[in-house]
Image (cartoon, rainbow, N blue to C red):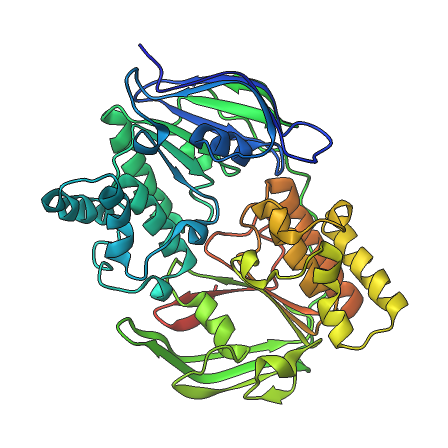
Length: 457
């Protein structure tokens, strides 16, 4: 059987990098086969997919990559790729326009495009969202949209970079059903992923990478490497000092309907909170409401002692890690990025440097201090963004999906960092996610956001 993808002794070094990002890679994927590539963050998984798609430039490459059956004209009509940061590949304003964009550029007949759009949206559970604008979608829904936009082009080879990272439980099940159908039709799948659990039922091979090289190939899923979980110290807040209070909070979007419905929540100083909910439940909207980025239709918010806060009033008091770190990275270097808030707080030069380096070290990105944030991998950007909100040592830390792009050892380390921050500074920490935490003992309270209201678990 002729392979849809064949990589032979391929190596690649980014321009200016001290060593190769990919080292002597050889790999083949046949029609109807699913190959899952795993490994720690920074091992070269994303670079491998970019190389297959032909999206690496200016660096030094050797070896060969062949995509498609003999006679195929180019990768463009044969291989489709869904990037780790789905937002970066969405171009259109409306959902249906985004899914139609690829087939239109492939000159698919107009009468066929509508059927492809409908089929692709149905496959990812967005069939009722075609008329909505992209900005009305959650990041998990945007990831489904990116997958649909690739499916509508009907590629022979599908490249997926951590496709489950932003999907809730039902979304992961739905994606696996779609991928299984693609396999049965002869499509080949090359998937990179940290969380291998959902892929057991569809993966034919698991490839483990380390430092740019393939270290192991097996039909069995390799266990992820994770240190023993370090639970929080058990110190619980007395509940005397209130850090956040939201009363009868309601929010609705035009064309979408009510997202938050008379929501009530109170958080005390030093609490560790996990706010859990499915894609589209309103988790990110809630965080934006309480920090003043969105104005609710009704209700009251008090945060860090400020009633009805505006974002500029929360400097040094509240740290907010966005779901997509690229939206809050703008400086030329990592050092400048992490020091930005400290300088606005008018900390002296020595204190700025000490706090920046402490935060970078905690997040294991101190070696990137002189790099541009926009040249980093998605996981590295997440850790730099986290360091930037840790450095001011805020009273309240709000983290929106902080584990995206991070391998399991890093996820455990982040939980340890946050527990230490609580112990050292009395910080209240809120983690918002669609997945359960890797350490179920970490949170003092688990709050479930469902149908616009919050319940304790």
